Structure formats: C-alpha cells, structure tokens
Image (cartoon, rainbow, N blue to C red; front, side):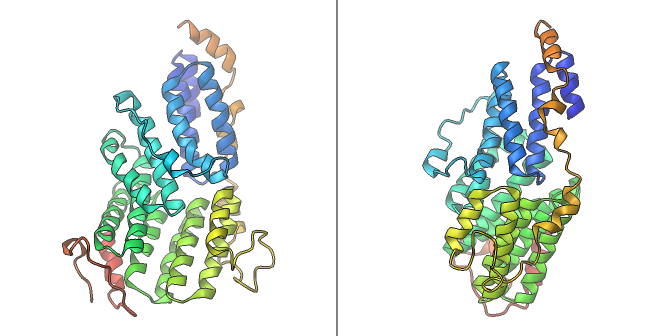
Length: 360
C-alpha cells in the first residue's frame, strides 16, 4: 500500500494515491494498532484530502474514523445522531456507505445497543455485494453475529439466536476459503454460541480462553479485550462471580492499553462496584487478570507505525503533487417459532454439538 501510494502520486493519480494511504489506516485499525496513532494519522490524511479536494476518499475516511473517535471518548455515542439518515445511494458513495454502516454496527455491539447494531447489519447487507475485501466481509459477519447474539440474550427470542449462528457459519466459511486471519473471531463467536446452551464453567472458560489467546497471538488487542468482556459476562450469568470479574478486570486493562477510554468508562458504569478505574489494588475484589497487556508485547513489537505516518506515506509529497497537478436438547433452531424463548438448562451435554453445528 505504501508503494502503491507513492506510485499513484508520482503518476498523477492523486485519488488512487490517497486511497492507498486511507486503506493502510483502515487495515491497521482492524488489525489491532493502538487507537491514538490511528486517529492522529487519520486526521492528517483528512486535512490533505480537504486541501486537494479528494472528496470520495474523504467521505470514506470520515466514516472509518467515526468508531475511532467514539472509542477514544472524543465523540459521544449519541444514537439518535448516529442514525444514518443522510446516507447517499449513489454508486460513487458505496464504500463510504459500507464503512459508515460497519462503524455504527461496531459501536452498537461494543456499547450494548444491539437493536441499533442489528439495524445497521440489515442496512449494510445490500451494500456488501460491492465489497469483497476480507476486512469488510469479516467485520460484517463478526459484528452482525455478536449483535444478534446480544439481542437474543436480551429478548430471549430464538429467531435472533438463529441469525447469530448464521453469521457464525459465514465467518467460519470465510476462514476456510480465504485464510485464517479471522480465526480468533470465529472462536470468539463460537464461544458465545456455546454460552447460550451450556453453563459448565470449565467448558466455557476453555472456549473463551482459546479465542482470547488466539487474538493475543496475532496482536488483535481489541478482540482480546471484547472477548474478555464477553467471557466475564458469561461467567457472571452462571454465578461464577470471582472468575467473571477476573475477565472484566482483564478487559478493562486491555481496553485501556488499546486507548479506548470510552470502553473503560462503559465497563465501569456497568460493573463499577467491582472494578477500579486506577487499575491498582484490585486483586482483593477481582483477582489477577488471566491475560495482561504485557502478553501482547511480542506480537505488538512488529507493528510498523511508519506505515501510518505522514513522513512515510508522503515522500516528496509537495514535489510529486505539484508535478501531478497538471497531469440433547438440541433443537433445530431455524425451525423453531421465531418468537419462542431460548431455553436455559442447568447442564447441557450437547453443548459441543452446538459449537460443531456452528462450525459447519
């Protein structure tokens, strides 16, 4: 992307040159780079896009930076304001629409507004036929599955659980056919699916830890943070409070490391009775975290921040641009009544069957 940026600028194709810089920022955002350099370089890029009137890429960048600003706490998640009432339907706006819906879908899932997230999932569906990128499809499947799982847990309606499993299957198929970049996300969704039908703490711990460890190995700290949050919620739901708050403590630390101040605040609002914003002296209440931000030191040392920097992406930019300017109880869920309740059981020997079913 860096080379494509330089080539585009040198050949006079400024729009393509800027697009590659924007894609570098988007891919880095998806891959676990800390939020602050993502936001800083995104702001630099948008300043240049305004200066050179590259409106198509500017519109796309504004949408991708939406979730970054909200997670950093620099913009409030006002759900009425975030409603995409001004989305344009022109073909030229397709990619800005896609990134706009995906950003809102992501925020809805992270901050627990699952009704909003499910609406965004429905809106992005017609647009996805124009975007076959791994990053776009992965985010759509991943966050859609989590949105419907969250809504199923909230409403106890089987039709939402069915949709969550449908997106889990799609993400598993993406991994099987186009590469394992999203394997840890598959594992996390499958752990969530398992938590609906199983209250065995050892099985759930094994499933969630496997997903969190996989995210750790590839440096996706945001997925490890949210996976820890989901694991903590699942533990609390089955009465494993000590283990649950260990996961939530871990989630808070990882969100802080990622730079997501708004998510740290959100966790404290939900569980502040047992979490401490300072991160100190919490062992008596929540215990030591299972993983810590230090566990991410190995994968994160390979992050190349020069790929995002203005210096790296714009070598001799002003010279180039001036030259270019002129030129068991295993019901079949999808057959159940859509308004029926999701059953809860004290133990479920077929839990492994549920997770295998999602994988298929």
